[in-house]
Amino acid sequence: MKTIFVTIMLCLSVVANAAGIESLGAKEPLSPQEWDLLRQRMMLLNNISYLPSLLPVIMKNRGSLELTKEQVTAFRDWRRNNYQQMVSLMNTIIEKRIVLSQRAVQPSVTQDDLVTLQEEIFQLQRKVFRIRLSCRELVASTFTDEQWSDFAFIAADNPQLSGLFAY
Image (cartoon, rainbow, N blue to C red; front, side):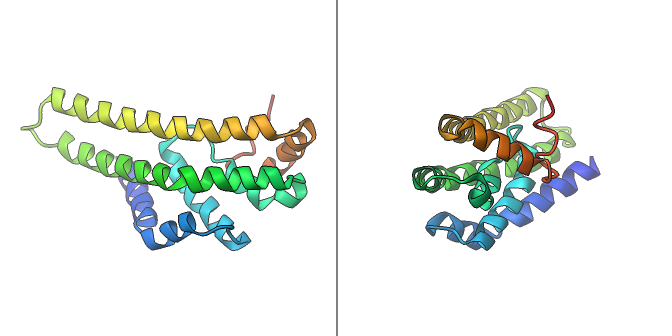
């Protein structure tokens, strides 16, 4: 329980640096350093979503992947249109998880109250999942077979993605 709380608090403190995240959502295009920061933050937030964040790794390696101008534009457009909403949802999930943990030890809170709060969290997670699926769909519909192969090679060096291409 302490580990979960520390993880949530760490994520919350990272996300609480809203100025950095908001500036990432507002700029176009991101510098390589900003993509790196975005990738690091998304990896921390991955703990509340089960679909890996592919876009920061893809954009960091866009040269190696030989992304076309159209792909880069499409990925930047996706980020501009979806990133802030996804981060806001994730922030809300983190806040609700903390509330759920706090209420779980309050005798006056009923099981039904806890189930309701958990269901709210599940609904928010589903929204985040759908946003991430839209990114996955964009990548899947624009990547060539060679880009997938190159991405698998790049992912092998990434601790968060290394096991994804083991099939």
